[in-house]
Image (cartoon, rainbow, N blue to C red; front, side, top):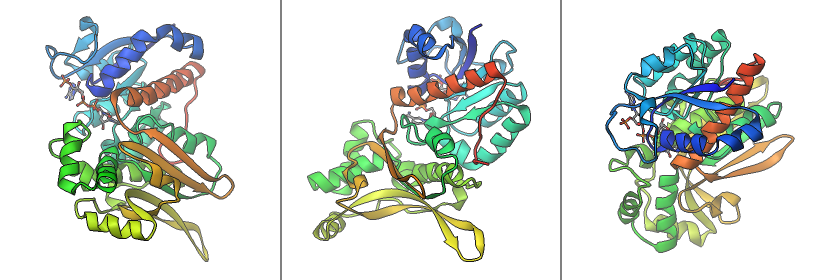
Length: 338
Ligand SMILES: NC(=O)c1ccc[n+]([C@@H]2O[C@H](COP(=O)([O-])OP(=O)(O)OC[C@H]3O[C@@H](n4cnc5c(N)ncnc54)[C@H](OP(=O)(O)O)[C@@H]3O)[C@@H](O)[C@H]2O)c1
């Protein structure tokens, strides 16, 4: 029996997902044993051009009909934002569908609430693509490092700001010229505030800390400073002392005597990174996350943190996991690790 997908959104990520499912059906089946069938794709504008070929008869502008369709098994939410994404995900879970989402903003505010609903319905919510796009990070933290005492997670999780800082550092261009270049290349939005003021990285830091430490960390818990105040003088000073500047998301578990639970600190700010540290060599729009654990030691995950295809690849991995779980009547771990 094919697993039927309802896809909410057909923009950068949704269209790439449709493309890799339609073009890769036989590979997906031979490698995973799952046959995926796209049941419907919800969009806002039915007449808009799509970046890839999409079967027109699958398009609908009624996302609520998709999430309540009894023939749909898994909902993929790649529309973004809070409303209607949140009520749609909730309705999907109440309709006993598993959910895959790439929506970092929603998860950083409501991740635990949505996970609890999923648990109560015996369904999955997977969100590998919400942090660091195509890098398989969330599953590594949740599954491979499930029993690890993670001490610190340090990430370059926003490609736009890393691109801007790379141009400033390597080409000696000012912040505003580097930002313009990022906008010309499509790395930065016309309104770049979410990236350059660190909001996007903070949402990802909240999700990462929740997973790494098994706590419910929300966006409002993250202390935040962006890169708008960084100058070429700062880079010159850093370089003289053997450092460069990166916007880091830092999630730390802090042990204190008599407090076995420990405390956690989650923050996003520009930081001096030693030129000998692996994170210093992460250039342009790439992302990397450095994990330190008691037994495993140091790990680094590196790759493309955004872009339609890398992000869709992470979404597809989640879809396959959710499909396996539906087939075997099981569910996976949700937002926090316990
Ligand atoms: N782009 C990336 O590289 C990336 C990386 C990691 C995570 N993400 C996350 O992935 C999600 C999608 O990002 P994206 O870049 O693909 O966004 P996008 O290009 O703006 O696409 C959004 C899609 O959702 C549809 N949509 C929006 N509101 C809708 C509504 N009320 N009803 C029905 N359809 C609606 C839009 O329809 P129309 O096309 O008809 O307007 C569009 O197809 C976001 O949560 C984002 O944070 C993106």
